[in-house]
Amino acid sequence: MDFEQYDPPSTLVVPEHKLSKAKFPFIDVHNHQRSLGSGNLNGVLKDMDALNMKVMVNLSGGNGEGLKRQTDNIRAHAPKRFIVFANISFNGIGEPGWTEKAVQQLETDVKNGANGLKVFKNLGLSVRDNTGKRVAIDDPRLDAIWEKCGALKIPVLIHAADPKPFWYPADDQNERWLELKTHPGRRRGPDNPAPWEQIIAEQHRMFKKHPRTTFINAHFGWYANDLAHLAELMEEIPHMYVEFGAVIAELGRQPIAARKFFEKYQDRILFGKDSWQPAEYSTYFRVLETADEYFPYHKKYHAFWRMYGMNLPDNILKKVYFRNALKIIPNIDKSLFE
Image (cartoon, rainbow, N blue to C red; front, top):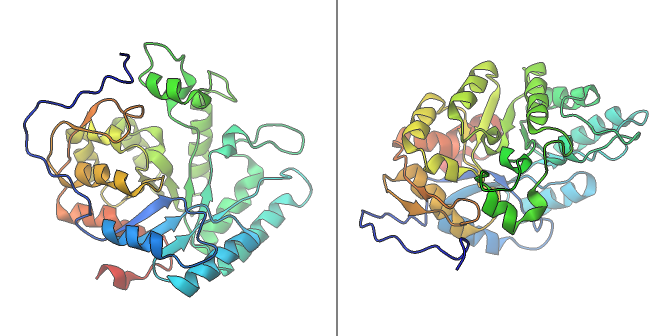
């Protein structure tokens, strides 16, 4: 038997509160649904209702006609329950007029129902310009896009890089060894395509360069394991919000420090999950709402350690679950949360 197989149930006897539904209605600001462009949405809505999810933000909206098909179908079948974010196509960046065309497309997408912009991790990792050069996150050819988002009063949710250990050797000193062993395609190496620190620094410079634009830093900016440093960034970049998609395991193993962080930055933290696996939301609810001790995460390869609940008070839960999102994402129906 190897480490992957060894996962015995705990003999610890402590109170358990296995939650299948959030205490308050919530907005998931980080989800991906590519099936919203046609047909009824009853299946997804049924799962959302069971979780008490009132609004799902689909970050995979695309652009152009594909985005319009999504927003048209949502208006026809469930106009209050989904928000769509547009995406930028970086094909051809560097060619004459590319920036102006990208800004114009974003304006059109917003007119067609987009309420935010999602930037995937390909920016900074795999996006290349027309000369083959890696495009940095703070490339000046993108400045007009970030400025336009500020002018349109839509937020930018951006995922930069990946967890830092993906750049480390996959050895016995790497806390993500099991994930890299089971998902070897996630390993990068120190300069693939640039050092982790360089990519993250590009993102932070870009944030600071555009103070009139609201940014949502996906996955706690990959600093959920270093909340002291993330707090410094929150102070340096007051127009930056964070969401905890795919990093609840980091918060669940440090409930005291995490609760202090949530207390201090309760007005700038959003609920995000990332992948659409309804059964996995239970872990998120349990970490946020309960004082439970030593319970497992739902994916051993992602977090082999145990979780502890933060037991957040109702006023903070409501901000994280929906109030903060209502502040910065336009056109969400507030009556759903009354």
